[in-house]
Length: 150
Image (cartoon, rainbow, N blue to C red):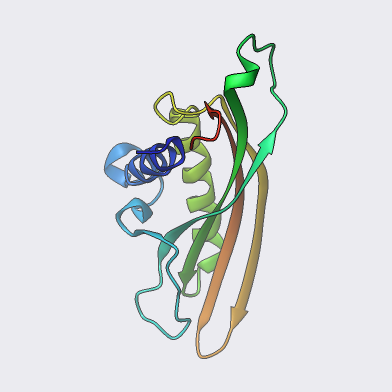
């Protein structure tokens, strides 16, 4: 398996722990998807969606005696939280807090990454037939692979 896939697997595993039973504010970890399209009219739209939509080569962040044989990469992950209902804005804030907490429990994604940084989050609320909202959290994960590996 590639390092990138190992990171995504670890992110999914970590986020699936987002349950009230595990000390979080919500149970959104029970509805976690990769690259899901959400129909706004759907009754079942409360979920977290992961999208690893960009991976860039970056300069080494620390001295690397083996720089000729390694590549440093920055994976950009969009964590999209979708919900509906009268308390959508409150729910979104609670889930965002849960996601930040979960990231803090495993910032190297089981040892596959050098570091994780969060750019922040952006919330949108709207109303068609019902109130719905979404938040996008942008997460940057830096990791190292063998030259031309992933």
